[in-house]
Length: 182
View 1: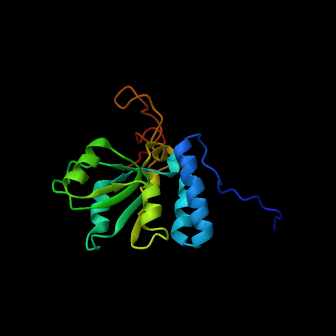
View 2: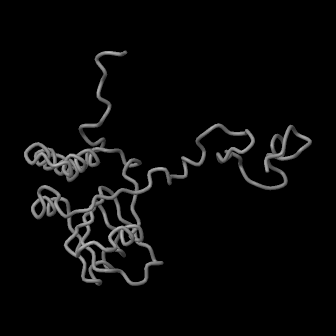
View 3: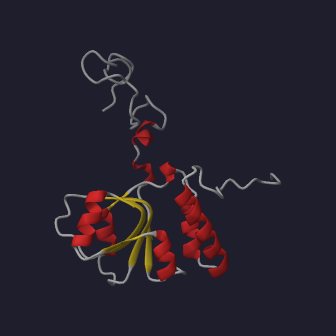
């Protein structure tokens, strides 16, 4: 057993964005004074790196918000992006660090509302009747390269220059060169 384990969770955001630093100050106060798990979760996510705050598509928000009441506020500590495949957008109330320009227009035209985190703190100080969502962290292209490469049945992407007749046609590509991956 190791003793004196250092806490590895961030307590401050990495960057110097003054607005983000103010939000951290606000949610640190709310987490301490309200004791709400929602505020603690938001504070923790505000301090996360950008790769740990992946974007959320509006299509997944619409899917999750189905059947919820109209007063439910969807909260995303990160970016919400548009999805052109969703043709008719329902009335939504969303809070995010950033909402893409086209999506902001669509939400407002549908009669919805786009709030900031400080407005949320005034309206719902304990996070009651909210829905906290986050995006798929492992959707980044970098994750496709992770894992042991070269063995039969592996799915990690190769760092090769290109695909085709002239590139990487040895081990695992032909029966005559060790083995052939199906």
